[in-house]
Length: 125
Image (cartoon, rainbow, N blue to C red; front, side):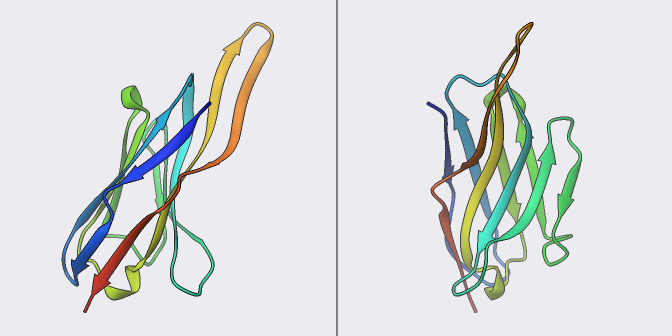
């Protein structure tokens, strides 16, 4: 069984920083794409940042220049460094990944649509 486990959320003042981590566990061959989403209170879930296994990244316009996504492929872990935090960054942050479980002569095996349990980030003004 595979799972994603986030950590690193908390309460911080505006202008402060937090670092989120998300570790994927289980029998995993590789993780081509890892992402962070967030869901602010009363709003829909939105993509914050994504990173491919080769390192290319994408960011929501609202976090460009303030957030940095990175990953450690050997640890199946993705990070989100959040700087210059604003009250509008307050949300539950979720890790997402499609997991390649196996690859061989007979084909590939995937576990898709994997979400972490979420970690609360609260930014006070």
